[in-house]
Image (cartoon, rainbow, N blue to C red; front, side):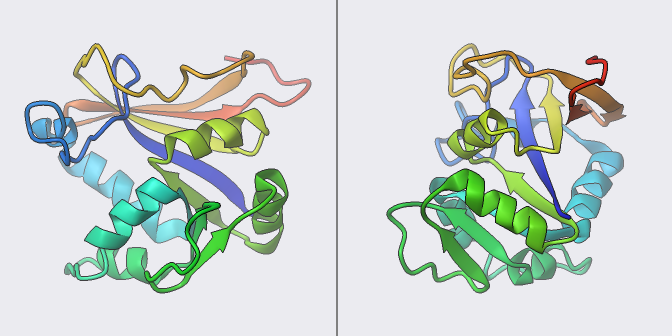
Length: 195
C-alpha cells in the first residue's frame, strides 16, 4: 500500500504562497533567500527519487508542467520528476500535456484511496494548498514534511487556516538543514499518543 506524503516549503508563520518567486522577488521567492545546505538538497533529492508518483492540485500542476519538461540535470532529479506518474486533481483540466499525467475528477477520497491501494511507495504532494487541506480532512495524509524557512511574511495563504477540527500528529523527525528546519510528522491514529 502506498503512502501519501505531503512536502511543503513553509514560512515560520505558516505561509506557503509563492516560495519560488512568480510574484516577484520582493514578495515571492522567499525560499531562495535562504541556504538549505547540502542536507536540505539531499532531503529533496531523496524524497523525489523514492517517490512512485506525484499528486497535485491543478494550479501547482500547471506551474510544474510549464517549468519542468525542458529541464535536465546531472543527478537525475529532473528526469525522475518528469518521468514519474503524475495525478492532478481537477474538475476543469481535461487534457494534461505533461507526460504520464492523469486527471482525477470526482470523489477525491475514493480516488486517493484507490491510488494508495494501487501503488507501493510514496505518493508525493507538493504545493497544492486546497488539495492538502482536503487530504488532511479526509485522513488521507500518512506523512507531513515541512521545510520551515526562517522568515515571517505576515500575510499570504496558510496551509492550516481552514482546518475545521483538530488533527493530532506525532513527531517523526526534526532536522536542521542549512538555514531551514525540516519537521516530519505522521498522523496519530486511534490508540496512539499524539505529540
